[in-house]
Image 1 (spheres, rainbow, N blue to C red):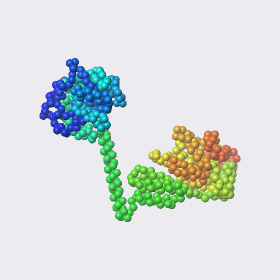
Image 2 (image 1 turned 135 degrees about the vertical axis):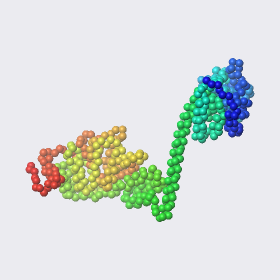
Image 3 (image 1 turned 30 degrees about the horizontal axis):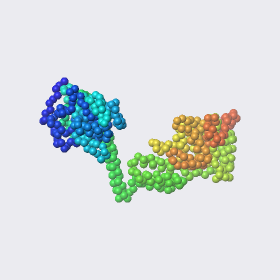
Image 4 (image 1 turned 90 degrees about the vertical axis):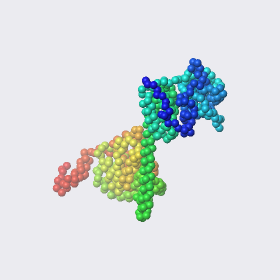
Length: 568
């Protein structure tokens, strides 16, 4: 332990009284006759216990040697102020544990408070009273002696140790260093806060001043008030300052980054405006404006329903109002490209020649009479009632290798339609059918719309392979999404989540394939015409080998001209 160094006037940096805000700092020059608080005039009893009016505080901790305005509104508190003024008494103040309690009892008050003197009392327009209070010393509340018409307490003054510890002075320097940085970064603190702090050479006063100046939670301030040892208070406030400094440095770093981004954005905007003006003078068009013009031209040339055209024109108008570097520009541009790339009205002409269809089907496949007859029936009826005939939705069910997928290609060739196939095996997410909403990053249309864009016509032959392999989990039920695709009463207004537009699938001829019928949901089965594919007999296998497999292998291996033949 070492003795506390004496104060020397030449170590102080005194300032004019007007430079200090008396709602924040004590008056170094006017309040005291000496450098120390004059505590002799305080109303102590012989046993050192004081008896005076009490003022409960809400969300406020008043430290010794600090000056602070207190706004009084509760009747008992106003009565305590009047009694203190009339009887020339000091008061004791302490914070409430819960600020919402209007009439606190003994258990609602922190036991450690501050003895204060009243400097000035003002009546406010809202009938409340403002009191300029000056903290004098810490006190411990012993008991509450009166509750009405105001509260009185008996309290014991708390005196700090008179000697410093070995680490007290280094702690004071560390606190001053941290406090200087906090004042520099925190613009809400008065600029002269640090200038006032360097005049303080008492460790306890320095800790109290810093605690009352920076923004701290009520519990932390009360905890600092309750610490008697000045060195321990300095340690506590140094931790609080370090935490506050860390937060301020992070905020300053973020603000610096934001400022840099704003300046960069303004600079880019300025340069682009200059470029636009220069290009205008040269008779050139900037890339973004040229891109918009190309989009408008593409919309004019594209055949599409009017509601789709209106949607695209609205999105182009949004693009025109955005800066070229906006992140949303790419999202909107991708959406417009998808809409313009879809075959809204483009369709291929059906070949309704029954003889040609029969020749194609017989040339590609042996057997499969049920499937062939159903296709020929469809062609014959459509030739008579082309406008009224809906495309059938067929479901080919049979073991692997029976020609379910390959006959779909032959049917498309017989009708003169484009052929597109997607496999549904293992699909477990409804979004793979309906697409993702545009609010998601990387959103895309579902596989149905993707396939329609890829094929380029609105009336292809669409094969949904392995419809019996669909699964469902927490991502949704893809089989339920397929209901709208395969239902003739609904698929003329198929709603993809990404497009947010109705797409007409009624002109598409859907064929699904499955190995077993039992695993297909009944709701889907009701919307399809099931055609079973049985396994091949020995005679059928031999005929398929002679007609298709052997000639194909000869052609692939260049053996057609060799005269090689197989005997049955």
